[in-house]
Length: 339
Image (cartoon, rainbow, N blue to C red):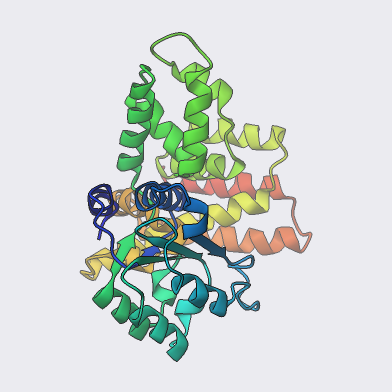
């Protein structure tokens, strides 16, 4: 089920007894949880019919869940108080990662007047037998990261609601700079809307008010290098020096992007249809762009620059060379191969 299909069902008061909200787009998940609350709990005693549990250590694989399963079982078994429905929300509990018979029994025996929602970030960690039960008796809703195009449309909608206009290039810049983070986008758009009385918000004002992360600048540096834009590359290099960015970090991210291009290039040459399957989660969003440029770049040139990145990463950490001279050699080598 898509979020759009979920919205249609919920606003029509068509509730399932069991949901799994899965994905890493937490802004959307929170929005839809509020949508469910607003439609499922409509009486005067909402506080008595809502039970929420959240694991305090969801990212620590060494720590057991701080959510007590017995508490969840008791909440699910409650009778609604002056309401048609009980709503139980369990966030990042780790319960679904193990094929536990108690969890299985809970999923298979939810009372008709209860809606139970599990929220988990990675659906791949869910036990397959438990996932099968959820798919059979409930609904799985995918809240994966939104595409750049979808986020730009969403941002444009928020500006339009406030009677503001922003150029498409500025929208795309915002999405990139804020790392496709819907929380950051929403807060930044609010700030921009209230920062001027003008109908059209210029790029100059956006750049003035929106801080650019060092990581974004480094990815931009890689993009400009790959595009052979020497003027922009050296301008960014000077910015890095002024801001005292760590050269090793720049070299490491550059190596990662070149490695991704090389991998995509080789997979495409071998006929594999979805090279992004082999990218790290934080690199998958680059797949479309990298795929488009991979065929333009010579493999030997990629390998030569990657080898230099690896060599100088070791030399810098060993104290054999300073960071920025090493980075300048890598850049010079890249542009030298064009001649």
